Length: 297
Image (cartoon, rainbow, N blue to C red; front, top):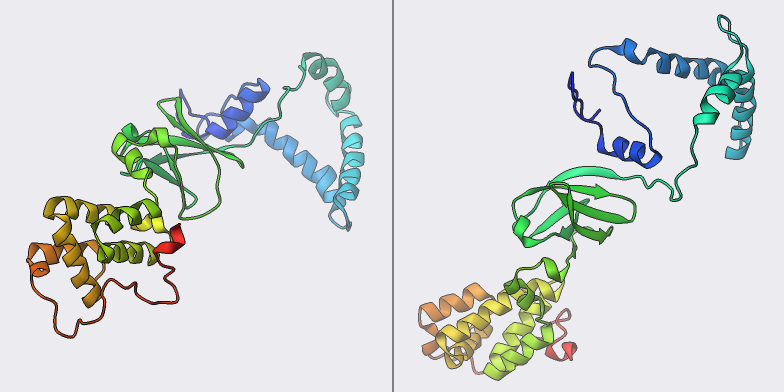
């Protein structure tokens, strides 16, 4: 049981799905009443005595060999006559159980686990270190996640709201465009080359700053937010001031949105660069790990 209750116990979702797939009913035992399932426990005990105990000293070298030995002992156990009842387990099965059996489902049962998850502010849920998107309207809401070996399904109030192919890459994101708010869809349309092309319209120093910010991240997309913030600075303060601010940022080696914002806020972009800044600050920084703007063409 998933949650014990005297009158309405909740079944484990995985167990309930198995029962539904095969069309059987599950009747939980009462809380703290082990005798309710004594017959099942006795069946387990019988198998342990007549099969497991009989094989405990034998050594097997393959699974088929072990299965063959179990099958032989199982047949003997089922054919063994009852002590207090007429017949055997095999005879009761043929007369009672077999006539009531139905064909197996056309599709095999797919094992799945369920977990609860809260939707992050970025409308993704975390599953085994990977992040999967759900509709942004569910931000901060709790949902249920159904996990199989191949898929990740998200449910809210019993309705499926998202389905993804399961991914084993930790720290990565699987995002469906339709799950994004309109502003984020616009954001997703940006590419490194598009950002650099925009920056080149402002000036060579701005292009160098943007390219360097993208290069310093393990994945260029991680620098998109900073680059878009710098675009906003250009709209607020003008292209000329932003280009001057980028020249100063290149000179002092402070290539970030916060540094540029500080330079513009304090009006440092209007001041001349120190006399030792005779080198061309628009030249890209030379570094073994920086590919340069041309890499994105």
